[in-house]
Length: 209
Image (cartoon, rainbow, N blue to C red; front, side, top):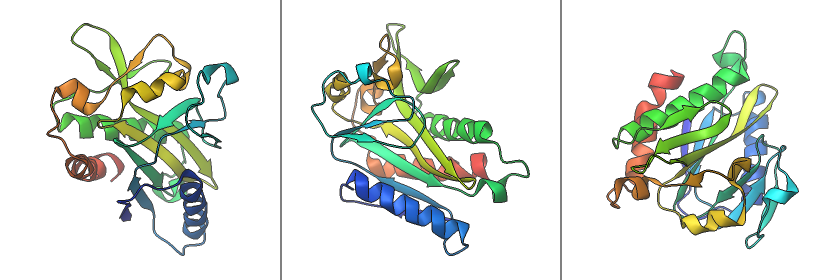
């Protein structure tokens, strides 16, 4: 299994092309499974369930993408992790729902390394945090695609993005909930990308083996 890190911003089209190629290589036994950690410049993606009315202000480029889900924002200060795993090799009965649960568990355990309680919510995709005022805000998004039982796309965890950029969309179609970040929850900026990446690596094997 390869951990890949891009330090420069990766154009979205390039990322999709790279993932497409890697999925094919994994299928042909020409490459190992991989987790690719990166950032994008500000952009919106529209998943297969996206409603046009949820794009409120196309202030950044909008990409139609084959992953599940609705509209999502990506930008600086957000850790994107594209996960390319062969579910047939990992599960006797490949199970996409269990895979999505595992991605959620991975994020929850990584956030716990910083004493942040990330939670699932029935009927709401993503990982949620209860704020001091009792409101619930999304701290991480998930969007998955599977081809030949090999996964791609993945998760996006808000470390310290400009949260106002989410205002151009109804994130994941849920207008009544806000968006938060690790720095926003903690009230300080001591958590770096390096620390977040290390947390993701540390808890990986407990979830995915």
